Length: 208
Image (cartoon, rainbow, N blue to C red):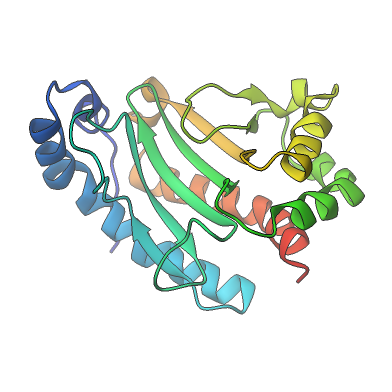
């Protein structure tokens, strides 16, 4: 039985000083949960997309000084990596948990993907108002989709199409205070419902 309960200890990992100390806490406290989620939702995406998906837990391997401010498990239909593909993530900052779909700057075909989304922009009308939009996976800042519908959504997609380093993230942020109150069943259901809602975006982007 898959059981995931988020606690203040999980979010507090990102408040620990020192690279070594934070990485140790990340490894022992948070990553076991990412491993469980990796297995569960890789299967979910494989069933729901027709492509075999694989989990990728952030390693933060290149860091030598600054400790990571967030961490995640990503899901993509490629065993050796995820950054060059549109992908899904579940992860944590110290302030919130995120469940998102992402196209980051490493994706080589992101101009064409942005064009597909611009041509089908009404697909975002099907998403809840409290979903978030962001143009930077390195920042915890985001705007609500309700606000984004006033123009920022189209701006982000145009930027994704035209700017080499542009990114596009859409999904759900759950504040730390709410996440720690969720039962395991409630969280897993919320994650599954969020991904189900995001699947049409993925299928549009990939031309499925």
